[in-house]
Length: 401
Image (cartoon, rainbow, N blue to C red; front, side):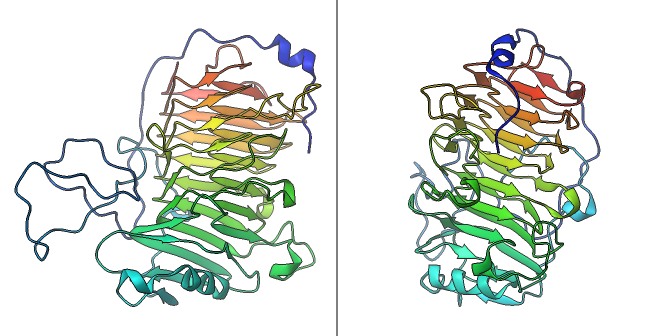
């Protein structure tokens, strides 16, 4: 799908030099469900990457039998106070349908994840008390006849890794190989996929161009999808192309245009941890609405060159350092969140938003957007954002600079 704006319009976009000051918040409503393990008391150092154990301490080391398990860093914006609607909260997984593992790290395998996801239902992990990384040998694919609710809950201690070689999780209601369950695969209410209390690391969908490509960690088409209390680090997809995107997540065709919720989650979070893709260093979609609440999107990058449509002599891409959205009528809401230190080689260092028929809208509430570099173009008065839609983005209680 190609955007309907011309090169002349791109040239006319001016780089913004002024931000909107202010900061605000609303009542806190952190999702229910399993919480992430607390960081070790007394540690003032930066938290290591999710899949890396904490560094050595200068204090005397406790014995192996008394040493507390390492903890993964908690995702999301701790200062975010955006209200979280009931449908966006973590799912209760106290009575799972199936459990991956038998209490040891060795029992938590790629094969077990693939098999559990194919069967569906509410899925949890039993891998022992310490954080564990499961390197996927194959992409876990959802069968459309399972569920209708599919929940994958890592309990705050599980990292699913693509090993830098493959996409981690895939759902597509229009993929015949995963089964057709309705005559209108692009608009059905199931499966309803939730990922929560997980880390998705080193996913890579490079070369996976079906459905337009993208989705280095997770690709979703159809049904419903939400992300709660999760982290996405070092994910990748194709580095060139005018419209593919989403180093972490690519979403298409949500039921009745209902939004994808991203709640208390982190994409990147530190230098060297961000995602990289032609467009959308974290999130990407066509015709899909997003509600991003109390989250952090930082250090992600759109690395393509030539924009969309691709300029002559270029491969295209490079827009939406953190978020790339395209389509007709859709909405994007960012609330209680921090979007910073993202970069786009072309437009929208933080967010690229193009509503082809100019009906789409965008809201930024109680959030901070800063140091999001647009090397090519952005909308005047909205640093880090390129916006073509109905009116201008609505900004309240937020800082853009």
